[in-house]
Amino acid sequence: MLPLWIAFLVAVALVAGGIWAYRRYFRKVSGREDRYTPERILTPEQVAMLDYLRDTFPDQVVLPNVALRDMLSIRRSSDHARAKERLKTQKVDFAVCDKEGRAVFAFDVEQYHLSDAKAKTHQVKIKNRILKTAGVRFLFLKNSIHRMPSPDDFRRQLDLAALPRPKQQETSDQTESVRAQLESKFSEFDTLAYPSTGFRESEIMGLSGLMGLGEAKADRKSERDRQIEAVRRRA
Image 1 (spheres, rainbow, N blue to C red):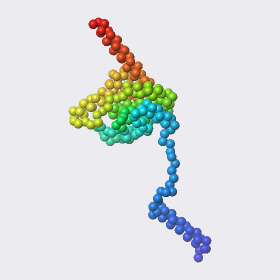
Image 2: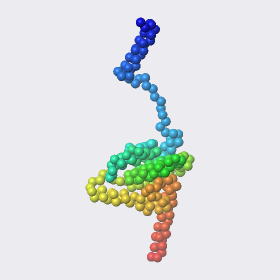
Image 3: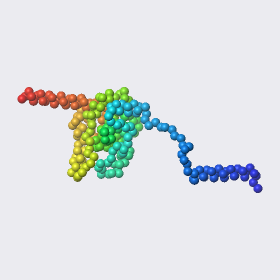
Image 4: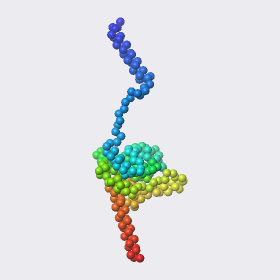
């Protein structure tokens, strides 16, 4: 016969095991005992940049940390699965929407990657190409609002850099063909419109390139005025 204390310990172990099994497999947990801790959604620097962009776009919606799959849809692709996967793996730090809620500008904060920089640069180029086909201008912001121009100056330059928007619906094969031809000319559009920036399809527009658009436009206007004046004198 087992000693009384051993029998007592065995009984306690059986009861504890029964309670554990009941709580583990049979009891429905209400969740009332759960407690949570808030996590940081934005860093202080991101909050400051968000305020700056809202000052730049006072009549538009500015959103932080937006995934491309939430702001774009696939209009046309030879490999739909690949195009969908690219949308899933990309995001932007900030997006600016028009009055209809569609993105018109997308921004990433300038960062310097010390590791795997080549792969990260390639991913940024893919992101830019995706956004550009949707008519969303993608730009890099300085990593501090103290290095940014005034909101009014920044907005004026952005108006010069805005891309043409693709139509939301394509109603015929002819429209599809025309749209494809226009999209193939996107990089030529940037080169012709802004020759001094050196912007190309695979490159990203930074703040210095953006701020040069106004000077390029003024230079083209001055050259045009000089040509007009020369024609008038010859007449």
